[in-house]
Amino acid sequence: MRFNPFTHHRLLTNVVIALFVIAFLLSAQAGELKPLADIAWLDILGEGGIVLMTLTWIAALLISRPPSKVTTFLVLGLGLFMFSASLDLFDEWLHQPTNTWLTWIESLPAPIGMIFTSIGLYQWHKEQYVLNRQLKRREAMHREHELVCSITGLYKANYLQNVLKDQLTVPQSLQLAAIDIRDFSNFNAEFGFMEGDRLLSEVSELVLMNCRLSDVVCRYAGDCFMVLMPNTTEQQGKELVTQIVAALTHCAFKVEGAKQAKFQHVSSALVSRKQDDSAHSLSARLHTQLQQQKQQRVSHSEAVS
Image (cartoon, rainbow, N blue to C red; front, side):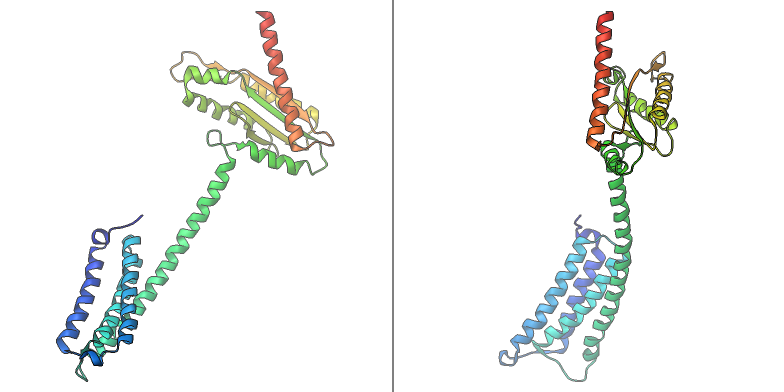
């Protein structure tokens, strides 16, 4: 964000301008204009470049930084250095009387300005240290948020796939389950997405409550949840899935504005690890089993009707 120095740094801007004007007036009052033959143009080029670059740095600070203690120290330090450099520059144009008070007033502001600039740089270093810590914390949170569903607080599918790959490197029995909420799109259409998000949040809490600490739960898709159960037999996996399904089907979800609570119907699937399984093949078998159950349910409904 760029700042207008005349609006946000009016006082500092006026101080810098005043220092330059004072340097010119002091030199003009005490000195006499040199003949062109006595002017050292190379010195003027070098000292004029120093003044110009210092003014450029000051302008960059005033434009790019907000009002702060750091900005004040840096601008005042550079301003005092510019004051001494300006007196040196004007001396190249004017003959100055010897042994005057202008000699020490020309030399003193520069070291004071360097002290101010050093203090400003130290304060700037502390400021940047704090900002860098905040940025690192924000980046870490961003990386974590990329793996976590903002609605349910559960991990996303890509995190589950990474954990699944690691777990498959260990020789152990392993189960992967899927829990799917039936007709969730119809629920959203009838009650709205806000109520749908609230339902997903409550479902995720119920799933977590019925899982163990070693299990990894994620929201795999819009209305589908997956549970990875390391070091678990097929019988143990079936019992855990049965508990989750029972908890969800008996949950009376109260919709805002509705007269009666809504009970959810869910589908579930469970696959066991095979010796040559990869993360992709295990997930694919689970997805196929879940789709087959959905198709069987549809076919049964059509036959009954």
